[in-house]
Length: 172
Image (cartoon, rainbow, N blue to C red; front, side, top):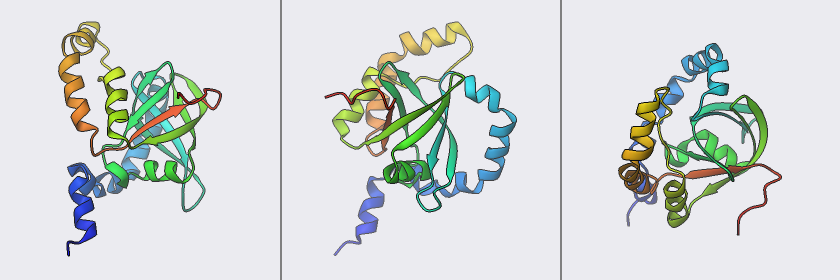
């Protein structure tokens, strides 16, 4: 009989098996975020996400790339379900996001359906936020079809998290 844990790890992204690296770098990452906090609070394509720790109940903050849409914000976990912030959201979906100079409450939902994840990244693909307009044009216009194809495949084994304002009703 196959080991159930071994079967589960085959569906995980490779990065999930390397999750020990960012855990080992928590101290330097926190120092970097503290030093550059103002930049990350206002930078396009980034969000400071605050969740409630599932074991301690204490606020936990993580810096993540995001894609904003009129309905909410989309985050993708590189490390799969091993990401602490994803597991914290599963325990308590009430979050706080700091982005574009705003601090807002939100309700997070982990999207697990593959078709729903692919639809989200097709409608709102992640692009690197670049400060140079010609580079933004290349990524957002010329390379958009290729990036969407890549993202539709990439999100398969990864949880996609959709955060909406508590006042925004869920779409049907």
